[in-house]
Image (cartoon, one colour):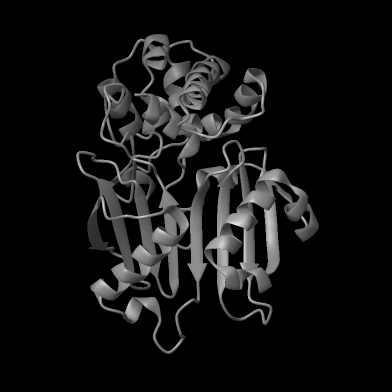
Length: 307
């Protein structure tokens, strides 16, 4: 239970970090504050992210920071590219609260003459395995599944890496053209607090990104709703905010309940040594997690009529 709650903060609330694969992500609803290269290098989260990257891929030390930004203390994003400006590029989205790199997008690391989408399934898996292994560690314990997506514009693959006994991917990867996009979902073996999985959906497939937030006993109590009923209402295209309003519950009440559960999980994780200790106060952590909670409770599933 503790790990899943922590996962709500540590893991991404967005499965796909780039519009190249889907509609604009939830986090893009919020204002990004641009950062200069110097600001990135002196920022605590930015500096740690770069150090992680440089130790993993030493060649990136010569790359230029071509873009960087921060979203309301929730996410720090950095894009680096070879100095020629036409070669390898890598994008990192880091959780500003925990320092976990939640998304990695690697572009043009394969020769133009033989891009990723021309490789065999096994070759693609080998490339993805290498990236995950370098960024996050050994993946031998994960079960693997590759699926070719229905994309009329260009060949797209989805790869899921899942721990045995879990339905939720730990890593979800999209490969398209000459790009690998890895998302750290952090799916664990389904604990008792996860009553319903895949509360949201994307392109007709379960989206597990909000499960660790919305499977909250206090939220169910506040809304006087069961987990199954919540999933049914979300499937109709309603947001959690709209469901709450129909029950005379305010948006702020919903935010407060979910944020409190998430921060309590984070604090417990720090005590257990499962996540890095934060130097922020309880109040600061609550404030920092609010924008991410807001993304989720205002999000709506796509319904057939909206497509």
